[in-house]
Image (cartoon, rainbow, N blue to C red):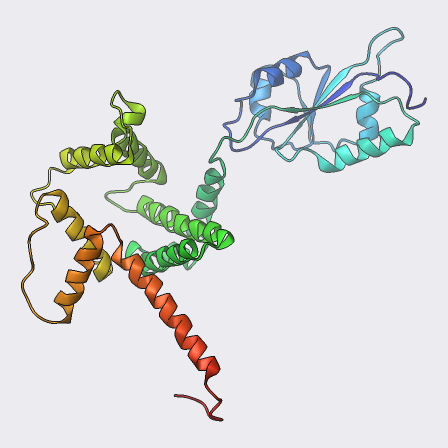
Length: 337
């Protein structure tokens, strides 16, 4: 036979993803499975197999599938019959070695090849890799001696460090570092949620964390998920503040402000809360550099400048000036203390 011979039969490579619940296949996938002459799967542990058999789709599994055997399986059963349809059930990555062998066989020109079709049976949804992250974290917690013993308290310093490294990546405009640091911050969230599952009296999981966040975001965005409207960012902020006030029912505008944050950020947060409550005229009493810094931070916040960010920018400039001065200074010939 030559490569000019008409196609004989049809090979369908059906790809699926383990991140979608087994059995949830697209309608084209179920249609081709039910109409196939043979369904093959090299992996006897493929998660779709029990569901295919439950749906009365006969599957031949466990044996390695070669390209030549697959082509032969598509040949007509008798003279005058059309070729057969053979479906190969694979994972999300397909069967690279098999497809390479089929390509070589087609390129030889000695075989009448069946039609070749790639059919995605299920797709990864946005965020699907988060399922992999949860699975990896669960295994690490169970099998790693260090991770298995960590507590929330022991991880606090890492959470703070990763948050600052994320800020540094953002301010530096380093996209690669930003991606990496976002991953490190996400690790802290998933790690803490996994530790929380082991609490003997009040356990909760990453699903409860995510579920609570989804509910909060929907509730605080009535202009997106409800009947309210917001034309400007200020409208959105007003919605947010009103909703938070109703949710928290705080006795003071200072409630909920974490006192452990950096001093400039703390001052700016308190000043912003006071201004929103109509208490911007309150002047703290006292003398010393601390009160002078507090006054500067309040002024910056009132002008719309984040004092923490401003000081960090100034500090980086100061660092660069120090480095430049060091390089310009003649070598002393000895080490500095």
